[in-house]
Amino acid sequence: MRNSIEFKVYGKYALFTDPLTKLGGEKLTYSVPTYQALKGIVESIYWKPTIHIIVEEVRIMNAIRMESKGIRPMDYGGGNTLANYTYLKDVCYEVRAHFEFNMNRPDLEYDRNEHKHHNLLKRSLQAGGRRDIFLGARECQAYVEPCVFGVERGFYNDYGDIHLGSMVHGINYPDETGRDEMEVRLWSPVMRDGIIRFIRPEECTQVRRIAEMKPKSFNETNLQTAEELLAQIEAEEKA
Figure 1 (cartoon, rainbow, N blue to C red):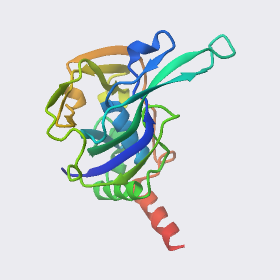
Figure 2 (cartoon, rainbow, N blue to C red):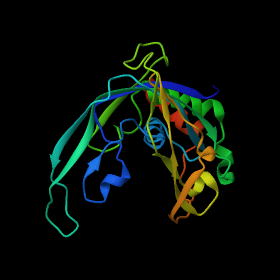
Figure 3 (cartoon, rainbow, N blue to C red):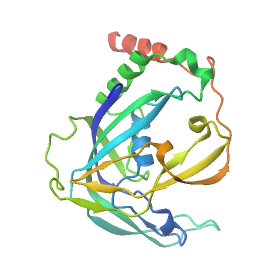
Figure 4 (spheres, rainbow, N blue to C red):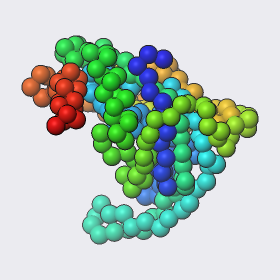
């Protein structure tokens, strides 16, 4: 796929929260990462509003195991409360994704340098990301590195189909849809031999509106172009 990257992301814990479990203050993870969580990881590697990240597929490399922990989160009324959070343990995923230009941002047309963005994306992956990497929640720190998708053997190779039920696919933001509102997408994925192939956001038929929202404004004064950023990185490497 054009402008694609393949990488491995791994960590001791992950928390891809099922929103139904948050109502009572508890948190229970989905058994697999959501599209939105993986998109967030790619955007932590490299992000610009000029481009739109599309996650194609993920491989679940390790056996799905969970661990519950007693947590003392901050209470809205002040002080702390008690809650149980259930995390995924010892996780490792292979991810394949690519970027496309965000055609809902005509104001950023001056930054549509495909080669430079792809170069920056690959460089950022080699460096472990431009921002900290998390697996669903901030306390679940993770690490990324390049890989060749599908070469290494995973736990669920030749395992067959696992139906995962209804899950959150991701969130629609105004600058990605052209609509001044935030929406949530749902879908029902199937994991085949450890691989989940994601449908594209616009292919999700279950979409619910959450709130009104306006896209953030960018221009040449508050957005560094890919060409400028790449030149800055190359100058720092030579220094």
